Image (cartoon, rainbow, N blue to C red; front, side, top):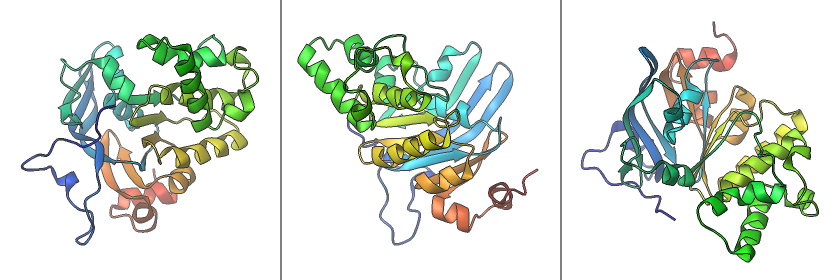
Length: 276
């Protein structure tokens, strides 16, 4: 697996400086510098620089259409699949700029996994869903595949619920189980970063609670970025929060500071529900 230490810069950007005078700098798993995203002539993201700290959860909040998901999908180049989409700026990861067209997209998405808003299991067995990525990348040893599947399902808090029906269709699982299966499928690739695009928005409250519990566990092994419309969810599960509005990053800081003492009035209005 690739190291998580970013390439050291002689003149680091402002977002790499210490948050507090006496605080040690946090290790950054991945960061963006001056990211701009265009759909044709329309600019959706404006000059966003943002760090994602190692083994912490960063929540991206803001009203619908503010660019949260567009920005998230830019991190592992998922927007490349959209015709007319263009990204400018740097995505820094392990000393590389992931926005370099020469970078291998398969390697990017192996190390930076993504889970989407609605569960999207393959029309295959539970086992084959989780084993799909490793198989695609050349893993053929049956014993090792079994170990990968079991380990991934355990990390996704799903193993105990499905261990006796691994070879049944994943489409028979509940919505919450399907979403955890999608997380297990991403984990099976042994990524360092997980991007979660509103992973609980289509789920019932009980399933949402399980996903939130899972996310707080996942940060022990992964760096997590999550888009959410729920202020309560962001406050419960994240360490840092970034507030987006109209494609711009308005404010970024610790979740505690953001929700108790926001620096920007726009942030305060949004969090307090006085936005509009």
